[in-house]
Length: 413
Image 1 (tube, rainbow, N blue to C red):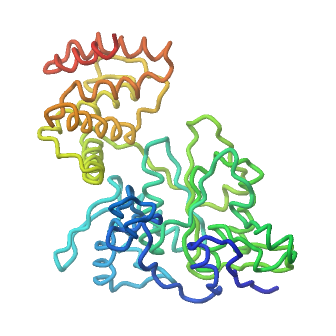
Image 2: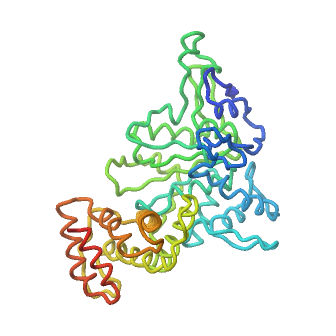
């Protein structure tokens, strides 16, 4: 059996062409000068390109947004690195959890949670087992997978987004049908999937929302993960994974439309469960950090005294999520929504935008009340009753929450 070179098909995108000629077993250089459409920075993007007139991507990829930190870690990292890894496992964990390097460079935390969870995830990627990040919605699974891929491979874009309509070709490979009809099956007609590219280049592939993919399509990963081989029967060949290849998948079992993993596929993964933040202070820290990052990317002014409203949003979400008030005295009904940390970040960011564009720039209860209502009331019949009961029995009686109570009443009217 031979390992085919993945040649660029006719009509391939620039991104496909750039990677198509890489031969399995060869070292892959760092991505250089990404375009704005690929998440590049203002310095490397075409100012007239798809990222906008100023050339800045709205949401740069992790390897672009934190390029300076990754470079500093690489320079200071003298520990052994697995094949084709940009950093050692220790440095990857430091990148995610944060720290200060010997030269004084501060590495900002990307994940706030138990250190052992990150260490197990990183160690898994250094073995031949794939990594499955499991957790309820909003526990930073996608965020962690992106940063892991950026730190390990320097490229987080080898991504398959799982949906109910994801075809098998998205995981295996497809065909350039113009080439296929003109010349029949050939390497030139083959369109590699992100997983195939990661296998041939020794990089990290990502599969988001694995449990949303139909079960028969999920199982196309079994041979890839167990044999580290992707057969191409149309050519009588196969692509063998080179050292450095691994795969990170994310999944949750709370949303509708979930397809359970087969036992055969689940055995190919080492599962790491990402928990909800352990306490209010940890969640407030996560929300405040992400809101600050998002606010700067959206050119929103920093809101003075915004921590009070961030803490209020987090408290409301945690109490309704847990079904009990913070002091443990009052039992509550939980709404149908997940009320995740990610939703809290969205609520606060929306409140900052309201304060900046339609207020005096100070984040106030009225700026977050509508966002909280939208997050809580997903089922208009049942959730509205739960919300009104919470407002009248908890918010109304809580000291220092009078302004928030009035804002909640106003938006709920």
